Structure formats: C-alpha cells, structure tokens
Length: 461
Image 1 (tube, rainbow, N blue to C red):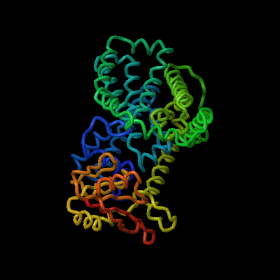
Image 2: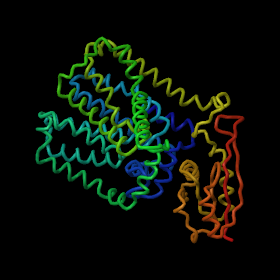
Image 3: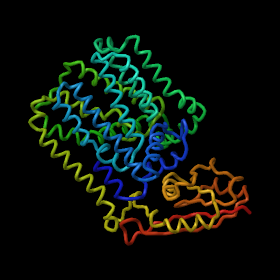
Image 4: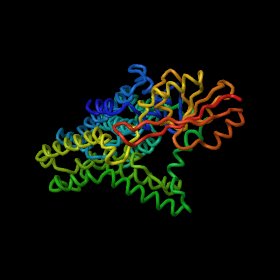
C-alpha cells in the first residue's frame, strides 16, 4: 500500500517500462514485442478498471508484489516446517536490492515472472508433500503456463525445478502419476495461442533481447563466453551481497552447511541446475551480457535457502533486529524514492519520471489541435507512452512499420535527440514536407534544468 501511494504521488510522468505498457495496451494481441503478453493483458484489465492513469499502473505492479510476498511466505512455511523461518525468509526479500529498490523504480515483466516462479515452486511443493488431487495438477499446469506468458526465462526455471526429481525418489513418486498429463495439457493449452503468434513473429520476439545479450560486441566466442560468465558472477554477487552480509553478521553462529533433508537437497540441486543451464546458455549461445533482473526468478529463493541451513533458535533470537533492519531499508528506500527527485538542482541529475510532460501538456494540446487530426508517432516507448497518457483517446505509434502513409495527411513525430535516417527517408518517399520545432520546460522539482522535446510537423506535399 505504501509503495502504491508513493508511486501515485511522486510524479505523473511514466517510467520507461510504464510508458511501454501504455503503448502496448492500446490493443489486445497474443504477442507484442520481445516480451510475452501476460503483463500487458493484466494492464489492459487494470486500465479498464482505473482508467489510463498512473493509479492503474501502480495498482497492478504492487498487487503482483503483494501476491509474491504472500505465497513466498506460504512456500517457506511448507519447506522449512517453521513459521519463524518462513517469516525470516520473507523478510530476506527486503535485503535484495532488485526487489526493495529496482522493482519499485521500474520493471514490469521481471516482477510478474518472479511472482510466477514463486507460485510455481509453491505448486510443486504442494504436490511433493502428497497433495496430489487433480485440482493441484491442473493448477500446476496453469501456473507454469502463465509463467511462460510472463517472461521467457521462466522456461529455465521449469527445467531447474524438475531436475531434482531425477535424484529425489520421494518427491518423484508423488509427482509422476497419470494426473501429470492434466498438468501438461493445461500448460500447452495456455501457451498455444502465444506460441503460434511467436512462430509467426520470431524476429519481433527475439531481436531486442538478442541485441542486449550480445551488447558488448565480442570479438570471438571465447571472449564472449568469458564476458558472459564474469557478468553472471557480478550480477549474482550484486543480488546476494547485502543478504549474505546480514547473514554473516547476525546468523553465522547458527548457520550449518549440512544437507540432511529432502528440502535442502531439492533447493541445492535446483541452484546447481540453474547455474549449469545458465553456463551452457552463455557458452553455446555466446551470451556476453547478463542483467541482474534476469536472475530474479531464480535467486528470489536464495533467502529461503539460507534459512534452511540456519537454526530456528538463532533466527528467533535475532528476528527483532532483522525486522528493524528491513524496516529501516524500507523507510530509507521509500524516502530516497520520494525525496531524491527533489534534490535535482543539487545533484544535477534528473530521473525519467521527472521529465516534465505535465508542464508541456498545454503546448502539446495546441500542437495536436493545430495539426488537424494528425497521426501521432514517437521514436521510443518512453516518449510515446507519456504522450498517450495525455491523449488516451488517440493511437500513438512507436515503430516505423506502424506508420500509415495513406491514412493521414498530417503527422506529428516526437523525439529527444534525433530522428532515425531510415524514417526520414521514408517520409521523403511518401511526399511529406516536414518542419522542425521544439518545446521546453524545466524538469519536475527543478527551477534550473530544462528538458527539450523536439517534434516534426509533417504534411503531405
């Protein structure tokens, strides 16, 4: 609730990922770009309920985070057989920067795939514990299908979650029965429409991700693999360093590395399988860049893993200290999120949500009205989403292939730095005559630093 209120009141400007959702949610599709469609489908529903507002964006993301925490606690309680350990494991999420900070500042698909991962492991553990009704197997298939529709790296989690079954007979015996076919069937039915879309749009679905994974411009396969492995190590360390520091300071006396239970074995094999698969992907696909947020669906279980090896009495003894530390982190991160933008004239740094589209609205209104029903185009999601935020009744395009030469005699094209040469050539071929203009305003919470939004006013010759 606190994060929801913070986001609604800190700024009316959309972040990069939020702006992307404003563009994608203009229409329903079985696929959109390089990300699966589930988050956008839910965003369409949220906007139907709350309108095209920041409230709709914040409500959806914070609801997903809330569900994640609730089922993480339930999962931890099943696995650890201890309410104290479950509480500590859940509090441990507040010691992960990618959750207590980055998920607050931006992110959409990483948030929902983390929720799907927690729900999937919870469903697996329910079955492993002997809850083998048909409903449980159907639910497992549904959750896993929704996970794939959340983000493609969920597939790796599925493989890692199944790998321990080859070793753990007790878990395998409950999982491998005829009802598993219902899991597989429900899983396939859920992912089928998007899979058919993906097969027809492979370039759209992979191009951007492939570019980010190979962004270092490697000279050869070996140097690419070394870069990817070092990136993986650094990203993993960044994800876990605060958590490990807290464990060393407060819980080291109660920590024992002894794999003496089925649950410890399961999660140990799970992490070994996860990193083995990641290493294979890096080496065989030449991946040179690993983002921290890509590891969220797997390392989100690391706080739970640590609690399994820590004595309950030690956790009970230090739990008040941990609560206080997590509360301090929550207050600090929340205060930084709210107060940070107000220090812009001191730091000379403006975040994306300080871009003053709200101050430019009157100028935007005049330009759009004077253009006589123009086609609106922006060179990226950030600009396009924020423009649509103020003109929710209009369609805003962000890709060259979406431009319609024969449908509109007027075109407004918005950008910050420059217009792609390929786009200018296309407008020239379509006989558009364009004039360059710009509008300016100071960033939100600033009296000095200005933002410039440029645009082309184009008319048919």
